[in-house]
Image (cartoon, rainbow, N blue to C red):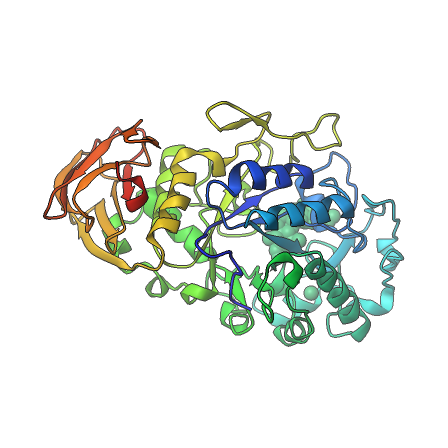
Length: 476
Ligand code: LM2
Ligand code: CA
C-alpha cells in the first residue's frame, strides 16, 4: 500500500485545500492533466459539523460518513473522480476516523444531527459503546493516553471495536468503489497500529473500471507527526503505508530560511532522519503547519515567504527523494479562517487570471510557474538519479538528474556566476523557472550547454527566484 497508483509518466500531487468538487473536476481537465500533475489530495468528503464562523477545521469534526460537505455532494464527488481519472489525475481522500465531533457541534453539513455529549451519532450510527472512555490527551510520552483519549475534546472512536471497524471499512471501500486511488489517514498517530492493520487489511482493491490495474491497493499515507522526542514513532506505521514526513517540512524550511547551509543537501534523504523514500509523503508546508496548527511550525515556509518557498518547492520537486505534495492554499490572516465564500457559508470558486494564476482569495501555489514547471521537470527526469553534484562550500549548489535535467540554487548573499556541469546534451535550453518555452524561443533566461556539458550559470543574489532549471523537454 505504498504504491501511489499514479498514471505512468506522471508525478507530484497537489492538495486542493477546501476546493469544491466541481472546481476540482474542471481543474483536472483544464490544468492538472495538461500540466502533468499526477494526483489531488482533497479535503474530507464525509459529513462534518457546521461550526459558527465556518473555520476550515470544522471538516475535522465528523458527524457521519454520508458524502455531503461544503465541497459538494456524493454525485458531484463521484463525477469529479471520474473526470479526473479520465485525464490521468488520481484522487486521494483525507479520511478522518480517529474521532467524531466535539461537544456542542451537533449539526452536520448533510442534515444529520448528533449528540456528542452522549456520544450519539445516529447518522452512522455510533453510540457510546463505540467510543473510548472520556479522558483528555495530556501526555505525548504515553502511547495509551495519545491513542485512547480525546484530541482537543473530539469524541474518540475505538478502532478495536468490530462495529467501528465495519463502518470505517465500508466508508473507505465506498470511496474506492467510486474510483479513488488512496487515502490520507488523519490523526493516525492517535490510533493503534494493530487496529489500522486490521482495517487496511480489509480494504478492497482499486476499481479497474477507473483504469487501475487489477490487484492494485489504495495508496495509504498516514498523518504521523514524529519530529523526534516522543514515545510514538513513525516506524510503527511505515510497515503498513507511507507517513507524512514532517521532518522534511521542518528541515527544508530551515535550509531555505538560511538556518542550515544548502551544501548539506548533498545527502538529502534518510540521512536527515526521514523515513525511506517510498514511505515518505513529503511537503514544504501542509494545511496545518502553514498556519501554526499541528506541530513543527516555527521554520515552515509558506506562500507568504514567496522567494524561499519557491526555492524549497523547486528543490523538493527536483530531488528524487520521496513522494512530493504541493500545497494549494487560500489566503489567510487568521489561523482559524475558512475558505473564501460567497455568503459566509458557501465556498467560492477560484477565479483564474490570464497568466494562469488565481484570485478571489485563492493562492493556487500549484499554478505558480516556478512550481508547475518543476512538476514537468520531475516528469521529464523520470528515475534518473542525482549526479554532477556541485556546491561552493556554502549556499550555492547544483546537480543534474542523470542526463535529463539540471538545477542550480543560490541562497548566498552574493551572486552565483560559474561554469557548471549540467550533464545535458549540448544545446540551448529554456530556464523553466524564469520563463516558458514557446516553440523555439524562451520567455525567460536561455542557458547554453556546450559540447562538454558545461554551461555558464548566473543567479544574482537579488534575483526574483534563486534557482534555474533546465530539462530535456525544455530544449529549444
Ligand atoms: C490532527 N492531527 O492528528 C491535526 O494535526 C489537527 O490540526 C486536527 O485538528 C486534528 N488532527 C483533528 O483532525 C484540527 C484543528 C483544531 C481543531 C480540530 C477539530 O487543528 O484546531 O480543534 O481540527 O476541528 C477545534 C478547536 C479546539 C476545540 C476543538 C473541538 O480549535 O479549540 O477544542 O475544535 O471543538 C475544544
Ligand atoms: Ca484515538
